[in-house]
Length: 107
Image (tube, rainbow, N blue to C red; front, side, top):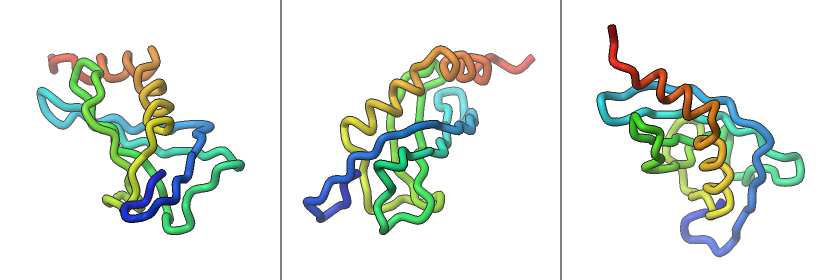
């Protein structure tokens, strides 16, 4: 994680994810990710409850990955490695299947 205005970089490793998927409309799916961090890489002290919001198309393509603290925008951004970890999880067959099911037209 990189704090805006700081040159300090925290490189977090994620051990697990707990997703909550919600179809926003005909174009977007929001995925709230509870992140379980490796004990070797604790969250920055300036954060309280770090999560991620991943915005995807209904086809499972990631549009944006946003760090949140206590459910709100925060003064951090994810590093390229952290985004790669989250991307790999979102692109996993399990999550892609969940997005596809959520994106099916209502009957």
